[in-house]
Image (tube, rainbow, N blue to C red; front, side, top):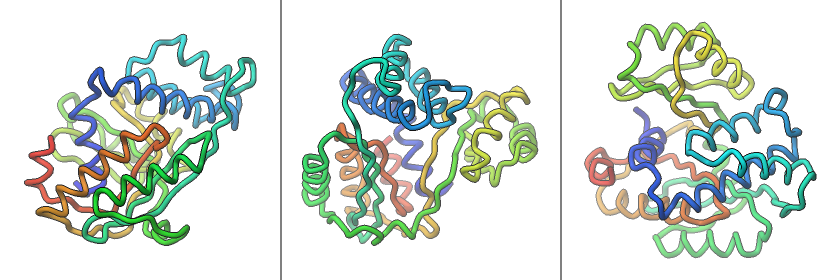
Length: 248
């Protein structure tokens, strides 16, 4: 399985402990609020909101928190005006990093991101310096212990998926952005439960990274993930299996 999927898998296997649950809820509330602001408060007609709400439910966010975040986005309740912004940079070993944020203070956010990068042997790049190395895609994950490969593969391809990869523990289904919702619906209609779904950035080429650089990179990505304003961190690293095993 490709490196970017390995990083996502680490986070899923680690789960969210109580100390980090509040931070995760903060990120999810921001995404729900912005999604509702941009596309309206109905999950039936707003694919981004549907994804955000599904993710919140998967992480056991109380329904009242979800409803409040939607109302803040639609203007029914007073709320903070979050702005979408991205940063590009480099990690140990010259690894490309694309960082997606939602913030009410870009000066604070860029300072926090720069500090995390510098502390862990990384650096902030200019706009466009690494974005070209990533493609926007949808990804859905299915628990491999519940379904055989043929069932998942046929359901995904018939629904319009671009690719299906498995490692014995999970299947990762990749879609074009425009097909993401249709593939998710198709899987559900075929009786295949999706354990997680996200819109992501997949590197066009990956760079192998191991040893101390791999360890530093994982610490850097953790540090960035811990920032309230950072929603997602994408890299083009193919991280050494031994380092990944230790991180899990």
